[in-house]
Length: 284
Image (cartoon, rainbow, N blue to C red; front, side, top):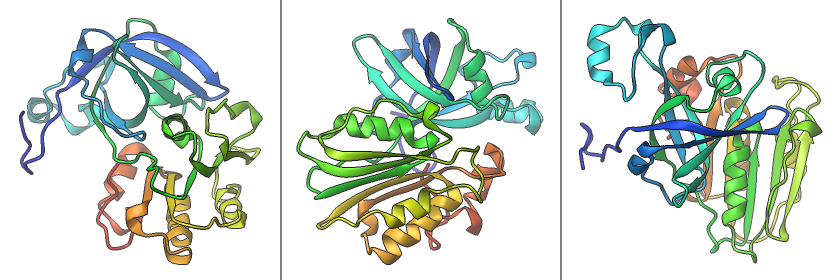
């Protein structure tokens, strides 16, 4: 297997086609992707597995897979394909398809409008998947927290759980139209939190709700993903106040309020983008 400069294996580039679509909730669109390129999809044993989708300007006529090294030498920076990170909701080896859920808020962003307008037969290119988290049956309690962007990973995590597992799920969304059915063990409680407004720092209620929830006994595994500042504040709570070991925490910023994806990714290399102060970047 090919390796990059750091010695890590380089996963094959994957080119798939849109073979199905479904409106999951008011702002969540599921695209089913398949085709001959599925042979290059190397799945991971993780429930937060994610792919890096590359979007190129249509007017340039670039065809995937993209040779990024060559394109960097021949195109100005503003014309290079841009990456967007999304969770693989599920993979079906028999059907040779994967499902990816996209949050769509009107014309905001790049990937959301693309998913909204995607047609059967449209081509998509990505690298990955990456990912590390999976509910561990050795823990006494599982605490899963996030906003709309974390719904696919939380849903996949719940479906992977042993029926005897116990825990709590808290998901912040706009309103009840953004709720979906989740399959969870009987011992896992699910709470939907309604902002009743688009996300903004002054209307988010996730952190306060998490702090008010009863703290369980025993060893707790935490999954907390979503908007960067909310995740950073909850890191203080889970790690600093509740003393959850870092090895038992899966914390990641999926996005940052007021930032486009490229700015958000660049800031991961700076202090403002760190979830833990001593780390240069988050893994996603």
